[in-house]
Image 1: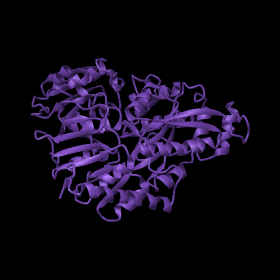
Image 2 (image 1 turned 90 degrees about the horizontal axis):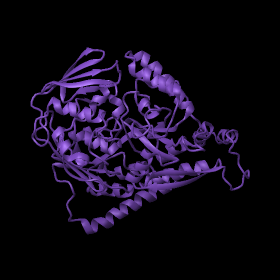
Image 3 (image 1 turned 180 degrees about the horizontal axis):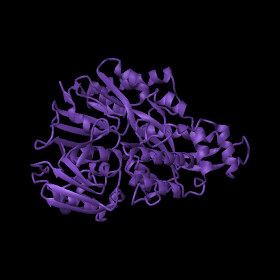
Image 4 (image 1 turned 60 degrees about the horizontal axis):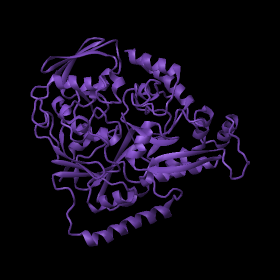
Length: 531
């Protein structure tokens, strides 16, 4: 799984409806015409064999051992294959290892494919696999995935193509962690901390250019062991402004945008038939994170009041145009461990104010302008994120919570979240497959840098349950365990689940092979070509 900026769609914070939509579309199309006059002779960025993809933010690192933000994880997955991977339905599938055998509940043997080569032409062997996982486990790099491998008792290369992994005890989600990309030991040791800017792996693409704030260019790997990409290159063009992203798609400067065009203008820019759309249900869950070490937010009744004060139906209706549904768990309803009995926090301003009264944060002047307390809401500078943050802030202000929206450039914003330098923020979890994510996100041993519990949540029963869930091999029993976890977390509310988003891809008419996956993986871009 990985985190991304909450994919919140919209344009102007409090303007909705047909008049505003028509104005916005007209403004964009007019700007296209103006720009076209001066650029009519300019060729599109991507050549015929290239696919140019617009993204809202660049990756922070392309080292798969360190990648936790969505762009880093999804782009690095095109460069670095793991022993196993995920298919379109989220199931595990062979990658670098074409098969494995379960020796016992605690021992596995993986057989690498013959003739595997890294991008630099050197052989990929079992020693590289051992190095990759050992570097995560032994702390030689500060990997947030270290806790995923604490149950590994031993890892050894039995031959150049055979790896044996022994666990200290049964560990149900273990195979899901072997999707992490394998790196070249030689190249990683030589590069040190800079490996993330020029990774050497064995995926379907190799890195050509890495300018995180501008473009990431990948070239198809001619020596790839699997089915070769349909295109020669993928260019990820970092375009932070939503309207500019839409403009470039309309003009043909980019070929494809996934989850990056405001829903309000999709109908307008697809009417001509030059821009096509595909969408499907997704496993992306957007949420509001809260710092539980903060003296205000440490109070559960305050957190619950915030949940009751947010009108998610209004946001989903007006901003997403129905392309989202209310969330109540990190797990999506399609996940086998999702608890279908979980309720929702309805929009109830009166309940929100009652809870804050009970928490000791009474309204100091009744209907007057003075707030109960003040919060800073951090977000990225991407326009739609800022506007949705302002909309949520406006809703919270109606119950007496003063909110200052503080936009930051993506790298700064994400660094602050990881360091705990925030009160509230919004992000999304992407690509969640195994319910062991509750250990990563809610386990009290998983405060950064050891894990992903950035809200600093502690609950002894949750700690015990997630440990039990990790060692219980029966899926039915695991489902019962994680149902209880979801119920506790829903009540404790270390974060407010907001919505599950549909994955939406907009693309130029001349593209073939476009599809979407529930986890919004970029692996589907391997199949995209031009007529």
